[in-house]
Each structure stands twice: as structure tokens, then as C-alpha cells.
Length: 461
Image (tube, rainbow, N blue to C red; front, top):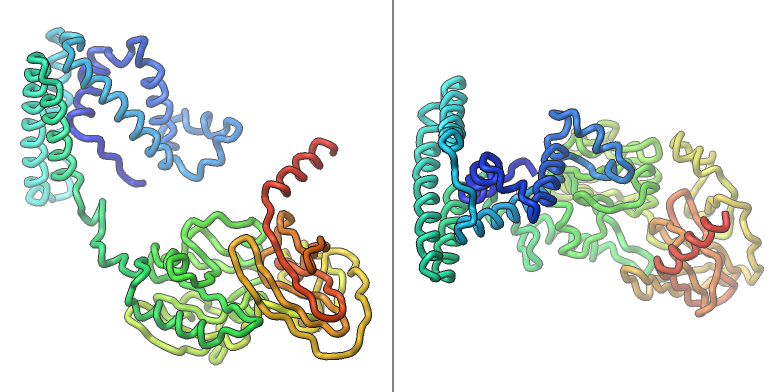
């Protein structure tokens, strides 16, 4: 949030009646006034010495940036402006002494003079003239609206007074803070976020993921360096995306893949030791099949070599590539070995000869496999939901079923409706030991049970 526009009426009242005449320090409003002051100091960040002190308070450092405080500041200032408007309408506002009137006039004249001086120093007086004239006219109209509303209120026409104040604010906001390149962009720019969007890139990705879909496959995509809002398009169009815009994601996933808060520009797609680029084993294990980028992909992943990715299209918005090595969402293997996941994450080195199509890595000694007849096993996706994933398994000799979705200990797993042990597999994913024969496996996310178990374990520990 780079700007805060409150409106001339509330801001004028706060600066004059509120601060200079002292109305904001009255007992009934002083708590909100102090809160607004504290939030303002936080919002100004490193420009005030108070920020560091406030930021280091327990819990406050979870705020990502000082500008986030502007949302709270806007609400507080609106309440203060409403309170001062009430004082004016009811005749309870303190009267100004001569020196206060002079100071109030000086504030607004000084603001206009400062704007003119800044425009002059950068040689932009012609550009600034119209906005400054509009601001002066709006100030006159706002003052006139306030006086008119006060007159109506004195005649017990409260509804009419309210309408005049509201109309004045609407005029002010529409003229001075209406749609512009700073406050709003044309709706057609966000057409890709419509459910019925005809965007050719999204249509292509839908067709391609449908083409490569299989009983054991659910290919992922990545949208990088196209624009800020583009990663959100995958939510609208039900495409499995490896990234997102300001997403809430697990630290394990971010560390493993290098995914950040946003990826609007080429240099914002960072990679990691374990996923140094699109030509990596982790990218294949994620099932990252299609990659759409706003620039040639080599400008994002400079380690790519010719043939690592296949360009399948060039749309108006993006270059679209295919990774033919992407693995299925489900893998059924019969070999397992213990591995140090922390070391793999830090070094980016998988054990020598590791092939996820044959072997699963676990963070503990592998549980023994039940034995059965030798035969080719298979696993298919029966139902894939947000908190429940149901799979059909046919494993003649049993095995380890690996679901290439992110592991978290609040997930639970059931085999034929009976609890089974959830395993953390291949650093990032989920697995379970399945018995010989046919079975139904269900992964279920149960956060309340998981949180309760965590709390009990912490209290006992």
C-alpha cells in the first residue's frame, strides 16, 4: 500500500479542530487518537526512531512491512474524522482563538506552497498546475459543504446534513482519488482472472493439462514473470500451480523450491539448492509439466541448456514450455532407504543413483513390506479434493505408495478406512505402506486434531 487518501473534510478537521484546537485529546476520543499516533509512527518505518522499538515487541515483528499499518491507520483516521464531524454538526467543537485560526490557514497555504516548490524544483509546474487548481477548488467546495451541512443540522435537518457531507466526500474522493494509473487499472487488464476468460494462454494450459492427464497424473504448471496478478489465475481456472501471489505456504516447501511471495518479474523467480532450476529432479517430482513465462525462460533460469525444455507455444502474454520429464502424481515403489533430509535440503544433493520411480527416501528406517505375489502394481486417483485425496491401489506384492503432494504432519492416512502410518517421503512428499492386493487409500487433512496433538505434546514436553 503506497498511498493513503482520507478526503479533505476529515483530514482538514483532524488538522484543525482535532490537533490545533485540541478536540482529539478529549477523554471520550483520546484512546483512538493515541492509537492512531502509534500506528502512524509504525507506518513511517525507519523514518522515526519509534519503529525499531515497536517492531521488536513480541509478535509485532510478524508484520511483513510498515506499510501494512496504513490499513489500520485509515480506519482510525476515519473514526476520528467522524467524531470531529459530529462535533461540528452539534456545535460542540471548540472555538478557535486568533492564533489558532492563523496557524490553521498557514497549514493549508504551506501545503500548497510546498507542492508548488516541489513542482518547480523538478521543472514540472505545467503538469502540476491543473491538479493544484483542482485541489483548491475541491477544498472550497468541501468547506462550503461542511458549512451547509452545519446550517442544516442547526435546523434539525439531520438527514439532509448527512447527505450533504456524504456527497461532499464522494465528490472529493472521485475527483482526487478516482481511477488512475496509481489507484486502479482498466478491468480488461484482469480479464484473465474471470472464470469465463478467453485468454489464449490459460486456454492452452487447460488443453495441455487435459491432454496429459492420466489415472496417476495431475500435472502442475508454473506462471512466472507475466504480471503480478497472473499466479492467481491458476486458482480461478483450477490449475495446479507451483507458485502464487503472496501465498500462505509451508516453510519446508519454500526452502525446497525457492518459491517467494511473488514472481511478477524475471529476477523474482528464485531457485534453491534442491531445485536449482527447471531442469532438476525436484521439478520432475513435483510434476511440473508446463511453464509459462513473460520472457524467454532462459532469462529466468540461466542454467538451462538447449533441449531441457520444449517450447510449445508463443501467446500474446507468454512463452509456454513443456517439461517432458515430469513424473506422475502417484508412484508405487517396492524399495526404500533412510536419508538425511536436512542434508539433502542444504546441499541439494540426492543420494547416488536415486530414482524416485524405483525407490522412496524416508526420514526413518523403512518399515518392513508385506510380501505378496510378484506382479506389476498400479495406483490411480479416484477423487482429488482440497482436504481429502482418495486413491485406488492394486499392489500384488505390496509396496510404498508415494503421493507427490507436500507433506505435513496434520495429514492422516487411512487404508480401507483403517488408520495407517503417514510417512514423509523424498524430503517433501507423503507416502504410506500398502498391503498386497487391492486397497483404497485416503489422505485426509485434519488440522484441529493435529493442532490439539501438538499442544498436548508441547505441554507434556
